[in-house]
Image (cartoon, rainbow, N blue to C red):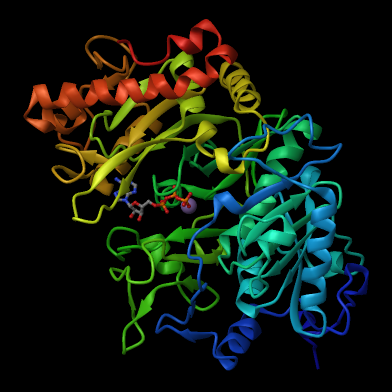
Length: 536
Ligand code: ATP
Ligand code: MN
């Protein structure tokens, strides 16, 4: 008889963490975690076989409740401010003890896993979860060590995740009852009061975003990545909802990863994670077949509404518009294994411009690339009470400021150097509105965005010259005049408006917002970067 090694159960003690008398479920299979979640009444199975759960009070990250312990490691390296909030060492120790007391005596789920697909950079992680489905998330999203390496596994970092624990802001030093705190000295990510799983992965991402540039001369990036048949790597930067996950899932290219990567000094690009975390609002099999197909047994759907027949109603946003699914990367058919690519040939900056101003695709000069990277523009569509929705410009340095502990100039410098050295093409892609701003125009059709990206990657947009490109009079961006499989009229945002006056008014408004935002970085930027901004 052969024994399935994965089924051999071993257990571990959590005493060294100060967690006593816990019933530890160590390294359970996804199937088992799925089953337990249902048995405990925490989830249900969709007709696709995926587990559906509700993350509770929080259905998104809570950036105002994310802290970094300020100590001798971080004090003079972190860019402290509204994004990187300091937390006291003593307060952390006290809160940690409260959380571990809370977890003591409970049934817990523990997983040993790692981040960073390149073994040179591997970071071993132990995730301790209060809930079984959070542990399934950890299985899906982190890299999965082989049985043999589990034997002498030692964690470099530990994630302690207690969604049911509520802090007392007055005594614990938090803002409110929920928190996510990174401690670089103790190498702990402490999460309480929130069940939103994204906090787990973004906690480790934030840790790597500090560790890799400081200790390993590697640029961490909030981007997706894939690789073509000829080994050409593309990376896609962008804030939440701009299309990193959607556009990197391309059946003609091998997926490296959908959200977090490092660019090493040896010019390789590696995924930090072992899975994807896709938005599923309005997901359709027709538009996004790869992601749709990945939602099967093993996948974890969050905050979606299930119909009576067991099918998921992806159009229903009654719990949150931020409905999500996590799945291990091998649920996608065409993947690069291990998740490593070589020097990027093309970089895409994705923006969902709800003002409908930026061209759907444009090519950036090195100065423009640096400027737009530091700016990290997208637009948020905020609903107001009377139903009139006004887009708000949103700038997030390096297209990921909430996860970047160092000053944005540090990441920008590293990227600029890498861009120069590699001669990579850099493109700005507006996956947002066309034909007018939000409320008037509509979101760019996915098939056109895909066609533009395809054309850029295959060199079909041609060299920069007057015949091929028009220079945008406000932003100075080179926008192609034609693109295979895309109607030429949509390549100019201005033309899609049919209202030049209205268009230029909005364009100037947006340019002003860029300039206002850039002021705080001006003293760090060189001349080339400064002239990469709007022309007016
Ligand atoms: P996060 O950082 O939160 O994971 P993301 O950058 O990965 O965000 P996606 O999950 O890819 O963003 O979300 C993009 C959303 O926008 C999807 O729901 C997608 O269907 C939708 N969408 C609509 N039109 C487009 C387009 N032209 N290009 C890209 N995405 C589009
Ligand atoms: Mn994503």
